[in-house]
Image (cartoon, rainbow, N blue to C red; front, side, top):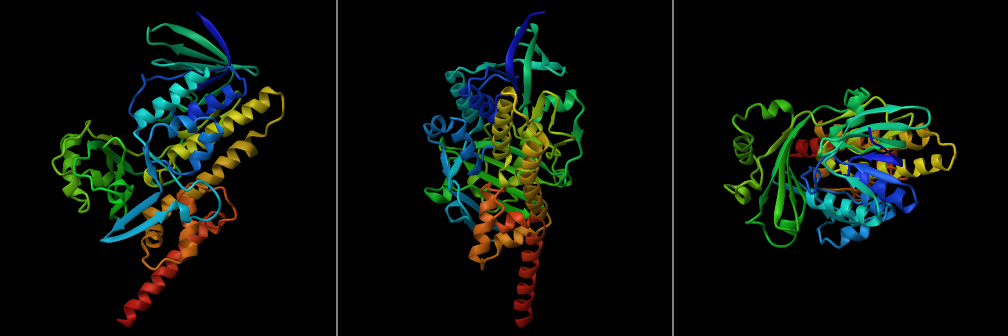
Amino acid sequence: MKKEKVDVAIIGAGPSGTVSASYLQQQGIEVKVIEKSKFPRYSIGESLIPRCMDNFEEAGLLDCLKAQNYQVKTGARFIKDGLVSDFDFSKKFGEGWDWTWQVPRDHFDHTLAQECIRKGVKIEFESQVTDVSFTEENATLTIENKQQEVYELEAKYVIDSSGFARVLARILDLEAAPRIPQHSSIFTQVKDLRRPDGSEGEAITFDIIEQEVWFWYIPFSNGNTSIGFVATTEWFDQFKGTTTEQFTQMLSFTEKYYPQFKELPFLFEPIQVKNIAKNVTKLYGNRFVLTGNSAEFLDPVFSSGVSFATESGLLAAKLIIKELAEKEVDWQKAYVDHMQEGVKVFSTYVKEWYNGNLQKIIMHQEHNLEIKEQVCAVLAGYVWNQENPFVKKHDRLVKNIAHLIDMENNQKNNKT
């Protein structure tokens, strides 16, 4: 059997894998990326948050993205029961980027992969990892390529950035129960022929239909728009037929966007994903580390997927470089604890969103500006900033502020 050797093998050429690969390549580390798909390929997760911009910049991938003229995202809009609440990233607590993009992921991921190739990274498309074994000194991946040839790839470290394919989680039996309640989603894209001009048509919007049911509107600069629903799995059970028929029925639930998308053809058959939250028993082991969605996925509600993917991909690359230089690395403290700090904050926000507490804060029409700035920083992805009270005290503060809003509303109702 043919054998190859590299310093680091990366599974998956999505944002997490390309950030790792680009950063490692910049430091002179020999990398090979194994990607099962042929690019460009469709992927969900078209809305970014500002925190990922730091990671793209440090990995040397920001300029190639800026050249694509993607739809700029400066904040997010929430609507519920006729009320509108806007969050502007330039008015957030603390330092950091105040904008990012809304991107067609097939084009976006392809751009990242091609820039890595331009930099000298080897990416093998249409190949998959079928097995892996580890020794104290290295890892050996069994690869099947598009010609159905099988060979071995030996590496000093493996970064699993395989996303929802979850390659190592499956092979090594690392799957764990999700840490948040399960929801499902269905989504597609349309040619947005009735898109309003200006900011009304450009702003990403979350239309809250019921407490645990919401619709997303993510417009792209190419004229297409991503639309989708997230809800409890049981909510979806009321709709019958093909996913196209089901999605067509669901559209009438969004009073805001039904007239805009009524009778427009879908660009592809709506895709349904059930029980979207994922988790694993551990994030690293001997000679391997899991990054991005291959490690954990929470919920699409705050567009945190690419941010966590790039954060973990960049950090994993930095720590592997230290180990290759024979420096001691405490993976638990430097990697797991850091990533879990951010995951815990976002987990709280996801839970408090679906139980209604966060929705009360976001939709409150008499915002305390200081609170709004602090919440906005979390929505922007700056979930490691302990100076932000809504990060440091996330497990208590959201509940407390929601309770105060309830008391305020009760006082108003009693007066009337």
